[in-house]
Every structure is written in structure tokens, then in C-alpha cells.
Image (cartoon, rainbow, N blue to C red; front, side, top):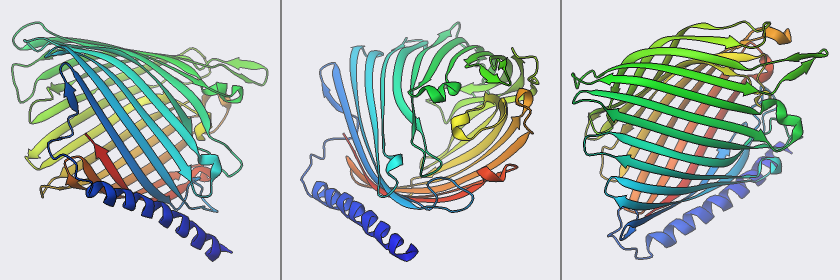
Length: 409
């Protein structure tokens, strides 16, 4: 029976892949206009940028289980379109839509549709000051972890503003604010609803272009749903304060992004929840090693509340993560991306009486993109995930491969 099921899955996956490759061949020889350079179509002050990806994936452990692993083929179709209207060369309004449609060969409880809509306004002055304000709304879901479960659908709403004011030739002051609100569709998952506010204030002293100094303060307030446990109400609301120092580079240079290290401390409303304080970090730096090679370093250390629909335990966890992404464009049409990430999660049992738990997750992947023409590309990739936890019930290994077609104008 196992070999027969595997054969049927292979046939379904092969048919989907053949459909993708057929569409690829048709588009390849359809005589498209070579004057399109994936920067959109411009009509006066308007620009429209459509994209479409059709990707066939295979996972050998779709439910991320320690035992009784089940594999499946599935298709992901992602249409995307963006509209830009320019009031002036550095003053424009953007409207964006992204859809994700998933169809599984066997696991029907995985089939889902995700939608994101975002409106933003971007302004840049001649001296380099910038303003970005906007809002977005997205429909997402958390995957099932067994054949008897269904996807846990939720809506995530965001409002954001980011201002960078050039106070002098080498000094800039930045202020940023973001509000998030998550609401699950089904009442049974209300435990993971939240409202989150984050405020950042920073000073950048750019006398040295090699190391433009950064000083930043961050405040986070999150209101979570209360939990009824043994006739007691547990309040999981918390506030976090962080002080960072480091450097921040503009996107136009050889080095771009921000390097932040510092100290962070938390304050929970519930007295039975142990508070956290210690080393904090938020780093995302991209370095152009050469015209054909880019290296991105990512590192983070912060507290996050548990999400029970994702098999978390306790009241919160300390996330310590780091990773590297290498992009190499050796030939004109072939781009290779190598990546590795490590996530270390320390779960705090706290008010629930559960034991502390630690998860250690490794993620490694390779993606090769071959650009046939300026508007069409073929993508092949592989990813390996391994989660080793003190809770054996959430241990898992997964091998994931994909092949797909990417279209853009």
C-alpha cells in the first residue's frame, strides 16, 4: 500500500510539474517584447508591475511530525500586482496586492488561500529625509499538524509610519511606529489574538561612512487574550524596553541595513510570569562583496509570546536566531542563493506550571534561478529543516524541494 500511495503521489506531482513546464515552454516561444525589463509598464505618472509565480513543491513531512511522516506534492500559485502613482519624482503612492493559493495532492486540509493588500505613501527630500506611511491587511493561516486538523485562518492588520529627518549634513533622527492586530476566524483560537504596538526612536551620526553610529530606543506593548486556568485569569500582556547601539547604513551603499546590539527588559502584567532581561539584538546587514556576490547577515534576540496554534507551550519564549544568505550571480542569467538559519527558542513555563522547554531549529537551503528572458525565469530549490526540542512531540525533520516558473513585467 505504501509503494502504491507513493506512486500515485508521484503521478499527481508529475502531472502538476508537466503543466508548469508546458506553460513555461509556451511563454518562452510566445515572442514577448524584449523591451520589458521587469520594472513595470509606465503610462505617464502611473506604473503597473504584475508578477506571477507557479511553483510545484514536494515535502516529505507536511505535518512536521516526529514519527509517522506523511509526504505530499502541492502547487503554490502567487499572483502579485503593484500600482504606483508619482506626484513627483520622489513622491509616490503605491497600492499592492499579493495572493497565495495552495493546492495539495492528498492533504485537502492544507488547501488554503492567502491575500494581502497594502497602501503606502513614500516621500524623499533632496537632502535625503524620507517618509513612509501606510496600512495593510492580510488573510493568513497556521498549518494543520495532523490529518484531522484544518488550517487556522486569521486576519493580520497593520498600520505603519517611518520618518527619517536629516538634521544636519551628518546627523539624522528617525522615528517609526507600527500597530498590528491579529484576529482568528474561529472563536476556539481566540487565545492567540493580540494587539501589538511598537515605537522606535533613533539617532544616526554619519561622520564616518564606514561606520555610521546608531543609538536607538525601542518600546513594544502587546495585549494578548487572557487565559482561564483553574478558575484563575492569567493576564499575558507585557511591555518591553530595549536600548541598542551599533550602525545603520543607507541602502545605496556597498553596505546597507542596520547592526543593533544592546540590552532589553520586559514587564509582564501577571505577577506569576517570570520577567526577562538581558542581551538584545536586531541585525540585518547586506554587504556587496563584489558586483556579482552579496552576503546578508541576520541576527536577533528578543522575547515573543507563545502561539498555541503553533504547538508552543508556556507564556513566552526568548528567541535567539542568526543566519547568513549568500547570493552569487556568476553568469548573466543564473543566480544562486545559499542560506542557513539557526533559531534557538527558550520557552518559559511561568504561570501555567509547565516545565521550561528549548527548541533548536536548523534551516538550510539552496535556490537556483535561471532567467530565460527579462520577463521569465525558472526556479529550482531545496530546503532542509531540523527541529530538536526538549519536547519530543515537536521534533521533526523535513526535506522540501521545488520547481517553478516566475513571470514579471
